[in-house]
Image 1: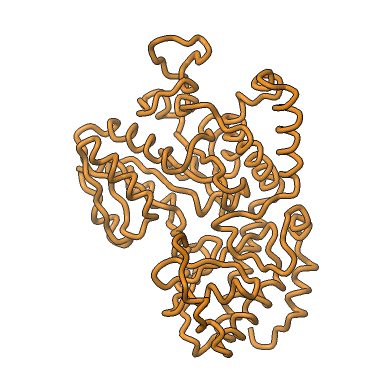
Image 2: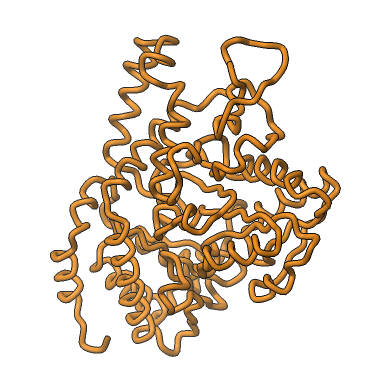
Amino acid sequence: MTGLTRRDFEALDRADTLRPFRERFVLPEGVIYLDGNSLGAMPKETAARLQQVAAQEWAEGLVRSWSRAGWIDLPLRIGAKIGRLIGAEADETIVADSTSVNLFKLLAAALPLRPGRKIILSECTNFPTDLYIAEGVAALLGCRLELVEPEALDHALCDDVAIVMLTHVNYRTGRMHDMAGITRRVQAAGALMLWDLCHSAGAVPIDLTGAGADFAVGCGYKYLNGGPGAPSFLYIARRWQDRMILPLTGWLGHAAPFAFEAQFRPAAGVQRALVGTPPILSLAALETGVDLMLEAPMPALRAKSLRQFELLAALMDEALAGCGFDIVTPRDPDRRGSQICLVHQHAWPIAQALIARGVIGDFRAPDILRFGLTPLYLGYAELWDAVAILKDIMAAGAWDRPEHHARAKVT
């Protein structure tokens, strides 16, 4: 990497076939945005789409827009589109609720499919809310949640494990599981496999069908650029759909929701996973982000992500040597998602100093600096600039200021 200059990174931007997508996002002047793995940037088309929904479909169409504008079909329609990004069939994915709610629904419905088995198995480093939800489901259904280190997963697969719940790409380190291999081993042990795709949908190639996965959940506000709090999606393999009894039996999961029958009859297929009235404005924003993502070929996105990681890691190795940083994201491209994470004992104030200089990444307790790689809108020259700013902060000790050490109540 020695000898590369900013001009070399500018040349990479000029040769980048994905570069035109950058112009389709709203990106503030003077900001290097490396947190799209937490909240994706806003597509320019989103504001116009929301204005159309509000000013025309809602203001003028009123209640008629449920049919005329196709509002009632949005959960299935967008779900089918997301299915194309995660290797699912069109009738296996639906948009609804939040990731946590969908995780609850799937765990509670999946456990009875393995009667007599009493363990939900996951890893200690899984995203905390996934573990909290699993704890609640286990307590509700008289089961237990068992946590192991990632390398101990195979050893923990016993006859009492009903379902294994893992996040495909780890939120703190960027480590990526072998989806197909783990799914195969879990199912060979007689258990079911549920994947959390929050940090991989739209960022890495996913083939749920090819992997033989049973269930999956994921969010819409990270790499899918659906906006803050965008609705989640869930995946149920076709073989399970009509065998599952979902724990939340709302009216839109009914076989005939507008018949207003007194008793619940589940809809056929994945639609039974719907509960309440869909949030139309949020769904419209999400669909815009998903449509934009579908225009970009995933092989090109993945290739750019891997290249950006390699360049960024090399720059950091060279520029930050002796500064106390350690890259914890796997260097092996087959074992990482689309982020780069560094450990430093002063990670929090360093993150704040970066933000003050216009480089927006994020911090994960206790000592992780996390930077997302979003190939649709992140340029190569920005990587050079971000490292140069970080090097300057460390050389000047600019992170060690009172305003960077203070912590807000919500971080």
